[in-house]
Length: 142
Image (tube, rainbow, N blue to C red; front, top):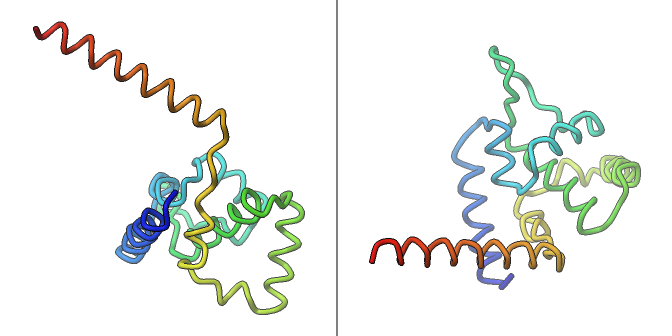
């Protein structure tokens, strides 16, 4: 991913996260790139990530929850901590007062996880399939 696309992603996410007070789990998933079932699991492991619930029982996340989710994602995926290791690291950050000072901007760039060769092959195959479908549709039109 180029620096320009990281900056664009950062701007888009910063704008999106600063425009609303509350977010549903699907919104958080789209903004952070973390699947909803992973967020729910992390809530059980990291209590500070657990959002409030609306009257209808839906999870209602705030900016601080998105920041926390991105920190956890960074620790687990980029820095390769285990769940227990991430808990210890966050505990250390809290002791040093670093946890409260976290800024969303500092986490967005680290939010970019390099795709694995398998991810690339799957996307390549998906593109080929879509191109075949488009070609078939074009042939059907003629």
